[in-house]
Length: 145
Image 1 (cartoon, rainbow, N blue to C red):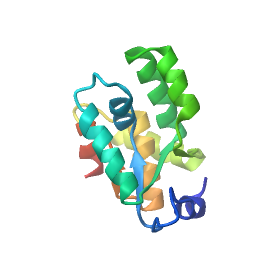
Image 2 (cartoon, one colour):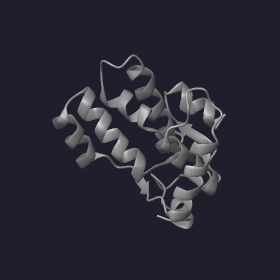
Image 3 (cartoon, rainbow, N blue to C red):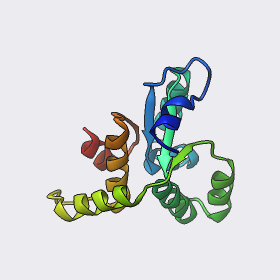
Image 4 (cartoon, one colour):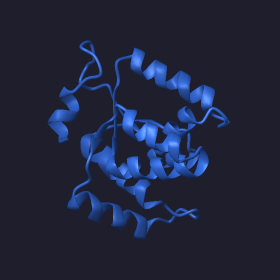
């Protein structure tokens, strides 16, 4: 997926091209895991994003992280089912994205550090001019603020 495809591949016909939100693994895990403390809020937020016509996308790195988190949290069957059934558009980070993400991680002054997956996410959001993120991880949300 490139920038043009991202803007031109809406969830439904009424979607404006500028209604784009990046989806973080924290939101996906919260929606899938009914025992997650933020499950209800995540499900409601997802429904609202769809109702408003947002185009939702993520990266190949977030897909990998999500499968690992679901596998560890709710089990491999649920992780495989989500991987098979999800309908998110996936942007595959390129070499330039990877270089910029590495530089972000290395230069991070955040006392908790910056995960590589979050760094790739931030780079991709900036690359496409996406300001909206669907996440429940306060650390990711702080990085996007």
